[in-house]
Image 1: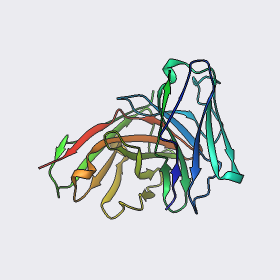
Image 2: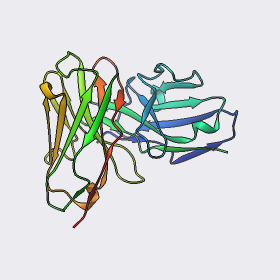
Image 3: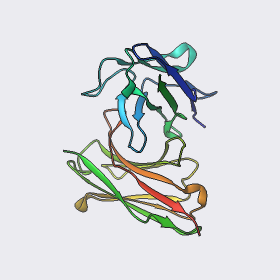
Length: 111
Length: 120
């Protein structure tokens, strides 16, 4: 089974930079089609990064994405943290067998 | 303006079949490249992709749930229907429908979700 593993939680102070990782499990090769979604409590997810490092219109350039093939992982980096960035973040990728797969989610606390 | 809205029962009994409808506007599922998917989220847990149907009526299912799921579309009504058989309390979740463009990797528009509780 294709699996994506994320840290359960991360925390950082306002103004700082935080990176959230998304690692493919054994036999799960991360492609360049990795998306990142932000989900605030009680709301549907919204895309902050798609296709590895593309930002939808309206998403600030404080959000960036990257892939490291050598470690089979993707990363979401948020710079200049703001309190409104506090949310759950999910990575998502595609596998030819399991199709669209989400990571377990990371709770970002901005304190 | 693209919108999606889920509808269906809020409560189902164990062993029953759940039928959810996603009614959308602002695009047509007969347009090449258009796809609609169902994704669920148990309370306090992660997102789980369930099924996707595309403009060409190709259907894709979660490996772990494929025997219980059926996705279909009614292009004239701008609706996508998901059926899930043999419901169990572990299927209690918020069910979302979302649009995806084949040329772009992400689910770009989501409905607000519908909470379905499975309980006797």
